[in-house]
Length: 96
Ligand code: SF4
Ligand code: SF4
Image (cartoon, rainbow, N blue to C red; front, side, top):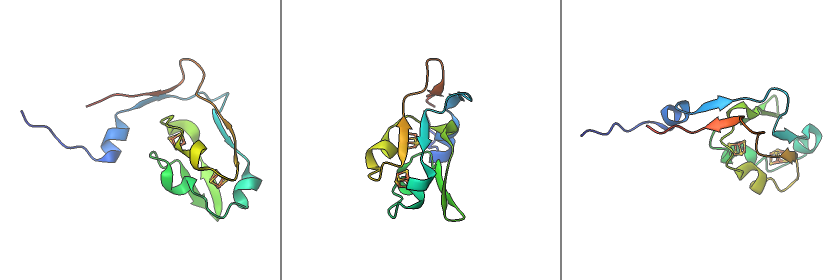
């Protein structure tokens, strides 16, 4: 049996997301983030949901893998809300 090796992008693309448009499960304070020098969130999110646009943190919770890494590494408390998505919402992991 041959096993095809998938790229990280291909593996992430297997997942399905039920996005809760009415209740973001992660919320940032843009003023705190603007003053954050480290911006560690930019390098730790496995889904690359934190990006820098015109010097500001840009974030979209829609593809969140619910790993919690951003919450752990954010030392400046710019993440003012981090919950798991409400029931029936969020990531649905699919393998292979
Ligand atoms: S919980 Fe994980 S996947 Fe979701 S935004 Fe934070 S680091 Fe990214
Ligand atoms: S989310 Fe946390 S680590 Fe990222 S810019 Fe805001 S304060 Fe800094």
